[in-house]
Length: 168
Image 1 (cartoon, rainbow, N blue to C red):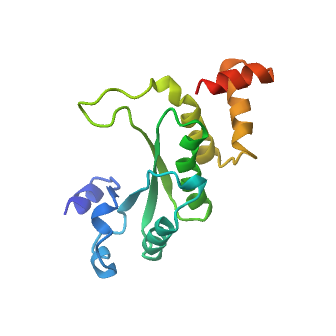
Image 2: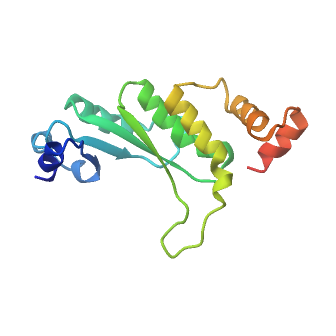
């Protein structure tokens, strides 16, 4: 009923896919057509989409569902924080996604200490924006780091670029 109410108000419902993973195909067909599923996969996967994720996406796609991917960025990971973005970008390139959401965790739980400052996430945020908004695939992550340090920090010479990138 909630989905129908949202549709009457010209809203497009977007739901986490977790409750629907255990449903069979007949049960999923009960959802109104305009419901999009937000699929979460926060682990890295070495820059590749996990096979079990692609199986889940394929099931939803066969049912003609709109699918959004949910990536996670955390600071302090160097290039590793790009893995999750690259995995979702691969899923998009394979035609599984209608959109993507990138989350930034600032603490492990509500009462926990804050993670590193948000500024430490700028490289990952801009990398995700570049991959999802422009579809640009850098020839290497190192190439992105060089462009980022040159444009964001004005570090044009290699030794300075390497020192600046090392701080991330």
